[in-house]
Length: 128
Image 1 (cartoon, rainbow, N blue to C red):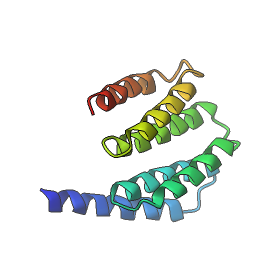
Image 2 (cartoon, rainbow, N blue to C red):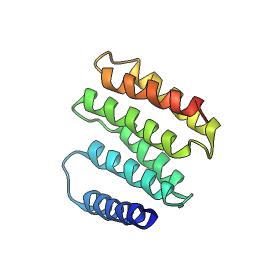
Image 3 (spheres, helix red, strand yellow):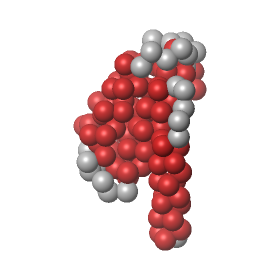
Image 4 (cartoon, helix red, strand yellow):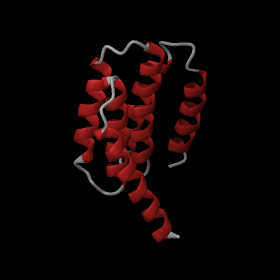
């Protein structure tokens, strides 16, 4: 089971690296993919991935993407993905990231699914 899980993580890592390397006309989308890549690298044990996550997140936040809804989904998702990776390891930092996700979610009432995901993740964190 552990070998299969590691194999899946390796496949995902390869896919994210390929996606990030493609020429895409939406810098925000590339930054979002880079946040996901950094989260995966962190989950696989690369502690320096946190720095790459923060850089990609800052780029995402500062991007002038034409779709504010998608951008809010991506930013809140980035916070939540890294928070989930931190649960059980750095709970204080995980809580801080969830707080940031909540701020983004509260700015756009269309983020109903994100709000449900946030509640589930907050509950999961409270169980640790």
